[in-house]
Length: 465
Image 1: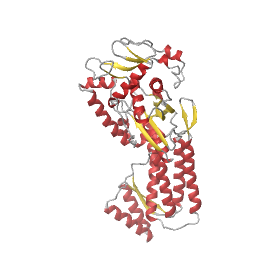
Image 2: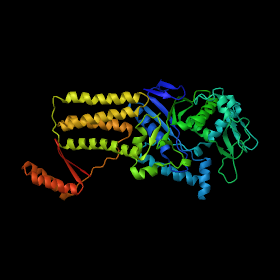
Image 3: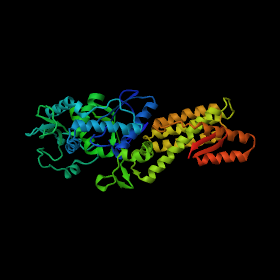
């Protein structure tokens, strides 16, 4: 498998540090509000990465943090007249509602910034001792970017370009505009912790370095997140981690592209900002997941009403196929047909296409295309009266490939009222007796009640209109 690494700007052969095992860290949300559809993309994309690596036989240790102390959280707490713990706890719970809705598997570890203060203080202390960080008179601690010659290697921006846009804000006592906060001195009324530099709280960037090291080690296999995190967040993580630990921080860096809304970048200021909850209430959660993996993860994607409706329709094709397989399995004969061997070879070709696409930098768009090719051949086989052996084989492959992408997870078997079921049976008898007038009348009566019948080689199928 090859993945495009932001660090090298090319596709790299994916090789784990420990044979047969990958350690992955994904930056999670800052929990001060409901997650928005921009947050949903890395959640879905890197959930698929994890599923695929496991599908290929690797053991995956997947860590995704919650930033549960931050300026935005403190501001939200002040607005609501509560404290940061109440705010962060509430929105972690809301996160789980949306994550479950999108079929995001829980990480192996979900660390919180506030649960790793000791590790954070230890790293900052080491950076100060090694001359990479300094404390100022008010108790703030800053990382000195000039002590790390490779600063800018992830974002591929020359230091002079980064310096041109850097500023020292009012109240900051840092020595250089490019330096960034590792520890923030406590302000009146803010939550704080004891440290060698006085009461304060961690900066945003240091928390991920601390949690990476604690739970995955000094060097991890894959670090991933949204494109917006490349600079400064991930750039700063590299600088502080590599200066502290003396080894590479992550071997591969994967970043997903932005989300546009009606072809304009999503922004609160533009009023085109949507939460996952907003969209799910209108269209359901699964179309959101489908949208997030329908294009290659590095490409921007566009959200609009038309696009989400197209995702719903595409998902319906998958559900219709899977339901058809179930229906056919109840009626098919267990026999070996001469054409079964060739049919299995054709179905296997779609699995091969799926794997080839996913091995090429997690190309979920082409992987979905392989699944729809599989659906096409399944539908043809069912129309031609496929054997029970083929139906079982096709069902297993369908579930296998959709499962890697985390799709078709809302299957519900509908039941009919006894009187409607009786009418369907009466229609079948009428057709056997060649009483087509009665059969047509029953069909039309059922259609008026929203029950659509379809005659197939395996028998009569029905669905609600």
